[in-house]
Length: 330
Image (cartoon, rainbow, N blue to C red; front, side, top):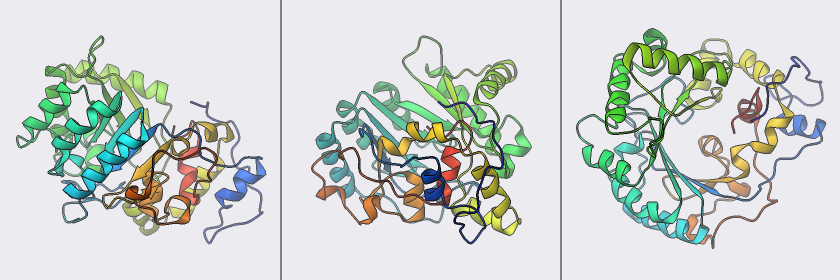
């Protein structure tokens, strides 16, 4: 992962979008870079926008009233695509993927197809008393749990995710620890993801990992394996909040001024292909939220023989600054 750059406002007035920020494509060009696909080793599956929360930072605007959910037929097509693609990592996300009724079956069928299966969780849907069988399947297949846990501060966390969410998240982390997740030497990996609770960039990942590890252990006896700190992507509900609060242009300029050219090489979109709940392909989950299809064409997984060839261009827009600011979204 790249070190954070020292430069600040290095933008030149070459080409700007409506918000007075240089286009991401021109920023790449100015640094002599292009964003193209490398070897695709990760299949990310968005199983739907249904969620038990309506987080302020959600780039997908997921929530309890969203009806977009991957059906059983599309699950079968995803499994077939995973067999053809020979992926090393399969990353299941949402919404709250736990709310998809096909998830347990999906994990059972995907586990033999890739060495690493990841499930992204907001923690509160995973252990709500309705999905014990899902937890058992995750443990059985050594599914990596990647859990959203934005802040150690109750007020900050609940301002982003909703009242009562913090305590429920703590209880779920304890439950996962109790069945073996997150301990040194265990093959049950528990990782945390922390996003800022406002219109600012994340703190140093190294320092945050030390702080989270110390405080979670001291206050609640909780352990975990890794933490990832990422900037919020200016899309969906978070973009709406930025606009309504008058912070959109300032936030975009802040992201752009922290553009780190050495982060481009390790961007997830270079090695990842994203499948939406309806089976169409995108370069990443953020382009899915933006509606930018992979290659600029609406392609269904049933049309694909296997993984993509290296060298194909990746669709970009101003939201890409969030993935290249500081240490990057790698």
